[in-house]
Length: 215
View (cartoon, one colour):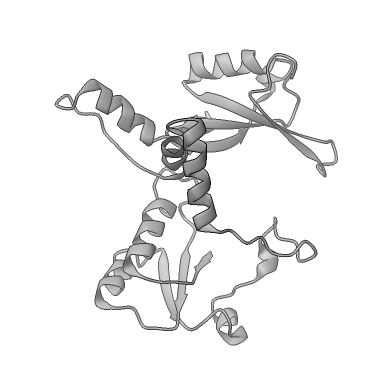
């Protein structure tokens, strides 16, 4: 389960839930635990009741060890977290301003990244202009990772990307190769023909859903 805390409001929770519990996610069956000092208002309580099978609310604070024990919060359950390295602070304002700065260099960058990071569903309509259907279909795509099958071993990256696009309708944009012992990895974005696919190589895809990538 995931523990959600911090500034708990109807808007913040509903935005998070609409993305996190989206049907396109392969791990959508993960439960969400919300913890906050204050009791939820009627609007927020109604949101919890509509998703009662996946969401549970606890009144408390993450600053209290007893409350953390109540929600079974254990930091060591996070594989990528290492107390020796410390915490990573993420500043939302810095991210937003960074997107704006990159858009000055590459117009449309912030829109592209926002669409990739947000889960959306859209059905085309004959009454909608073709350009709008194409754009909305693009907003419904996200980034997924999946290990490449043995059929790709030995191919260059352009060959693998062409096969994924022509036969599977998937956009392969990068690969991650790991050492035999799994301790080191290297991510290559559109590396070119000098990189060949090795066994246990993970691909980064842009697709409509995780099910499409698993094909």
